[in-house]
Length: 226
Ligand code: DHB
Ligand code: MG
Image (cartoon, rainbow, N blue to C red):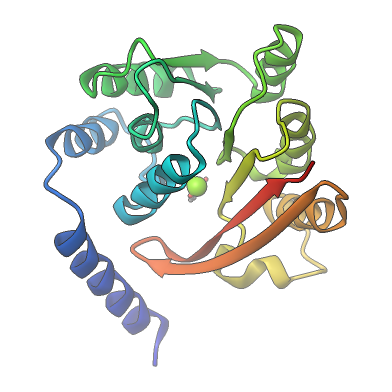
């Protein structure tokens, strides 16, 4: 089978499950529409992946969530939906343009009081959160520039507690994660990130490959041990 044919099947299956399992959602559809209108790259999580994030946050009972990489706030809305009324979510975004789109999308979803969009280099914002003793977070979703994933992991560990769930997007990259000799900075970053997690005495982890509208990729899940 060709790659194009595979992708067609994966997308049809995504469409099937989205139709069967996800309710019509004008707020999320508007968020996608306005992100596209503003010229943001359409690399947000798929609807089914977003719902997975929401369910994981809900299962974790997360009251404080940290997201590294906001884009247009699409995954942010899914995560915020798992919060209790007094829950808090901090999401970090480099681009002021993306952040403005995200804030409008988050406001329309009714989460302006729960969600803070912090603009700047995520590593700088993470240092600020540490300084403010903003942690510990119950769930941390890493979905920003992949070369910095190793540094994001280290910062995340300083903002975590025993039981914190760390989730990272895009760890498969159509299989490129297996390319040990790659000098693609994203692949190098993801491989180092996986290596650090695998060796970490306080992390218990797995990864799942995903196929669908976004092609062949995957999520890594790690839980901080006591
Ligand atoms: C890209 C980033 C992502 O987080 C993603 O899920 C897919 C693609 C990118 O920058 O190309
Ligand atoms: Mg991603």
